[in-house]
Amino acid sequence: MNIISNHPINATIALAALEQVMDPEIGLNVVDLGLIYQLDFDKQGRRIYVSMTLTTQFCPMGDTLTAAVKRVMERTFGDQEIVVELCFDPPWSQERISEQGKLFLNQ
Image (cartoon, rainbow, N blue to C red; front, side, top):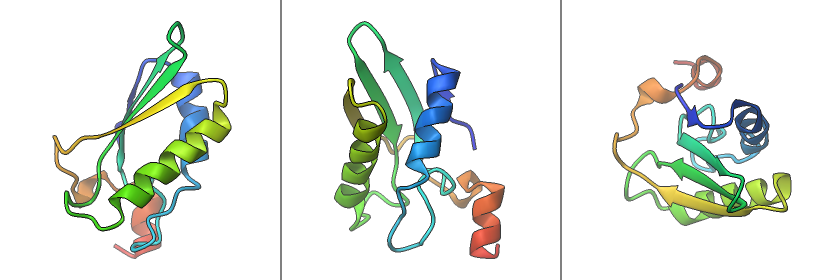
C-alpha cells in the first residue's frame, strides 16, 4: 500500500484515524482496503487534501465513504479545512489491499 504524503508524521496520524472508516459492503477499513491514495498538508492554507478512490466508479456507497473520510479528518484535524477528492487513475485493484486486509478477507 503506497500512500503519498508531504508530511509523514501527520500522515501517520491521519491514517490511524481513517482506519475507523469502514466500507459497509466489504467490512474493511478504507486504509487497509487501499482506497487512500494521497494526503497533502497545506500548512499555510490550513487545508488537508485527501485523494482517494472507490473499488468501482459506480460504488453505491461512494458518497457515504467520502463523507465519512471527511468527518474523521475534521475530528482529527479540527483546525484545518478538509478537501476530499475522488480519483480513479490509477484504478483501484485488489493488489492495493494491505496484508492485514487480505488476512481479514481470507485471501
